[in-house]
Image 1 (tube, rainbow, N blue to C red):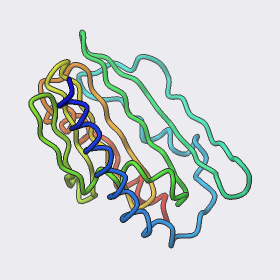
Image 2: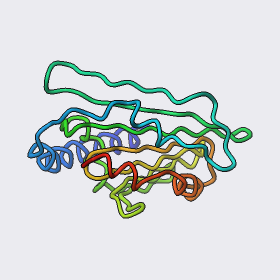
Image 3: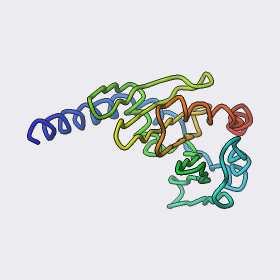
Length: 178
């Protein structure tokens, strides 16, 4: 238990340092108004082999003039498996991107899980997988603005999540950034 605590503390400190070093790139971009969540719902398409649990949900929120963000999300199921797809328009608000910035250059491989930076459909991303309980996610930054997260539970490996993510309309989402 003590070793796990030390590893967690070291991981946390490394992540904080990486976040501090990489967040500067987004602080240079001036925040903009986010795309309304209704315009993001198109991204949450029907997925082959999966049944949408309900209709997509979303929200656009503002906290003062500088913090505005939109999010849309949809859940799916296939037998005993569940999947969720979330798209966030961070509108260049730096703190929205901090976790992604922290993890995209971080790499960890343990007996319990792995996390590493990746590229998906030409966009930078992060993938993470826990061997038990067989859960994972793929997070992708589209056009330096939209964060898309595909999470699965249980999944045999990240290839299962990536296969589903192939069916999402990535280029159409990137076009909204312009």
